[in-house]
Image (cartoon, rainbow, N blue to C red):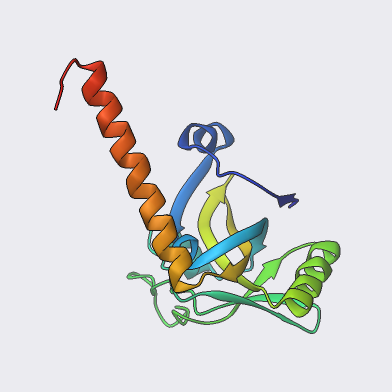
Length: 171
């Protein structure tokens, strides 16, 4: 459970690690500038694990809170297990994150100093264990979002034009 910084992993690397993606939070990468990422384990009930193995979860409204030196994941929706009985779990309960003391202290310090927030980025299984990738994030302003969209569209247009030229097509 070490801190990771920088670029995203490719699908090929995910398969090599035995990583099975359950849910990803694309909205978080659009709305926030991710400064640092951490991988954390989750404390789950049995029916939550079964529901996750069916590939059902939503991270859209989720956030992480540090309370009394413990990290908690709030508002992540893991639907009830269909074959569950009275032992079923609440869909939006808060769940404890498993992080090292050093990581929790680092996250708490940066949230308090810089006004950052902590959002879940992806939920996946690694070697049969449920993990969540969380990111220290800074909210983007509206103009930042427009700038990101414009640069993405410009890159796409460059790729299309390059492809047309390589195929010998002219305007």
